[in-house]
Length: 395
Image 1: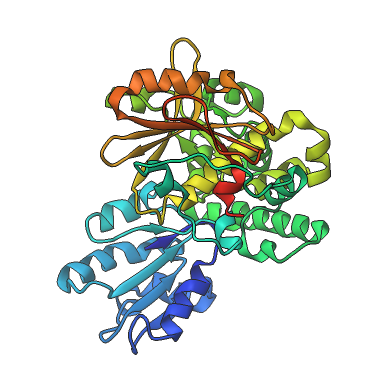
Image 2: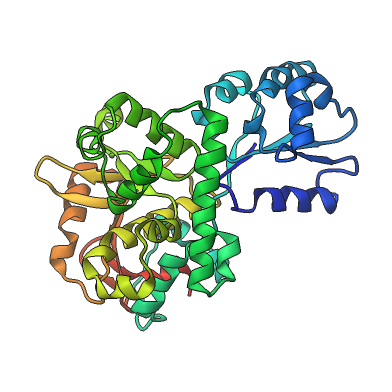
């Protein structure tokens, strides 16, 4: 299953694979955005799945939950890898009907919006570099002007928008995008009441992106009952509008109970929800921090899907209020700490949280970096480095 937000290129990708023969000569593509095919899938799912020769691609599978049980039966009957390629604009792991029916029978890949390194056609190897045994200082690296960085953030990574330089067009695109997800996709996933409250809730989350999730306070601020709010957030997460980053701890059990951070999944979407363009962001410095942290977190989340080093994203906060914006944990338990600063210069105090993390992680701590908007990659102590954001985005 290839899952991801709407308009990230899932359909384009699978159709290209089918057309070029990568999936075999008998590949067939069917989309459930087509009303006739959707009706066929719902009314006679067993017949809809019949494709004895090649790979059957079913696009937007979440629109027909009736297919899941017949899919399970068909896969159990014929254990041929690649018989079905599913795509969905909803997270399979958060949809019980899919997760329960196809557990152990399906590999899941997530396609996020484009990373900056992809847009710049630069091989994105930053995560692998961070975990490399050797990490050296470099000076006079390419500069990423502040206005350029802000423009990248408000543009976002959806492929349709990368080529659109017109702010009015982008704003109209995002308005239609949000409306489509709330009015159709979420209605497909759940029968809900009070749909009018969801855009306001999403805008409030955008204003607090990169902050700790406080359900009680969010419920009070919106007037939405706690149980309903929890359901709305689950739907936003299932449709890739928001994502959570759990807290890191040496105690694996504590990671489940500690407060996660909540993020909007695309800074272009975040800017559209808050009605902010690059000029306004430049003139309102207090907004830049949350935008930049959201932007950087998503860049790491995207790059993690293809890095050779398998990583999980966390954040860190201890009882002395030392914080680290992002923690990358490798599969062997090794730790990289990442602080995110919008300034062009940094000092030793900017490494306070990373030093606390290093003490907590002990021998598992590989190195800590402060990402900043400067041009020098410099050492600030054993395994502590200042690194330009330009390294991450690939310029």
